[in-house]
Amino acid sequence: MLTHLPLCSIPNPKKLLVIGGGDGGILREASRHPSLEQIDICELDQMTVDVYATYFPDIAIGYKDPQVKLHVGDGVAFLKSVPQGSYDVVILDAFHVIGSLGYDANELVEEGLLETVAKALRPGGVLCAGAESFWNQEFDLESNISMCRKILKGSVNYAWSSVPFYQSGVIGYMLCSTEGPPVDFLHPVNPLDEKENSGISNQPLKFYNSE
Image (cartoon, rainbow, N blue to C red; front, top):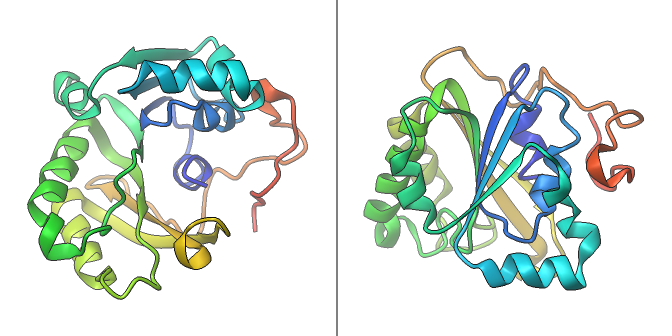
């Protein structure tokens, strides 16, 4: 859902950056979106890439998409190095999720990260990042939404899905757009065709549906 929620929210996304996600799963799902022309991934740990390629090839198959370019290194440094407005979509799939330590504890760290992401996105571009579960009493959803709106200056929504092995069984997602063409996350304009877009894996969708 980290992949499809943002990529389905805007028409014809062409350039995607993934921070983290070295297993290749997001790349596999991104390959289902035919409008994409460039998929960059910045993963800190080469071992993650190698282990998944060896033991989980059905996930790591995402690297076989010819549009994928792997950059091994620090994701924040990579974000700072790219020209302003480089990407239509940025997906953060790092270990840290927004709100994981409470708003006050992470405010400065998260604000700096979000400002860096905002510069890398084009006007009306979209960020999707993991967020804490709404069942976590330390997660202040209202404050985090306000922070995202202040920095990215566009639409902000919180989404969630059931992930049984995650604490509380729920994981959240922050969906944010930068100032520019409006983005309505509740009414995606670019839904996947579940029958046609099987991507590099040639496997049917298991979780996503347009509804």
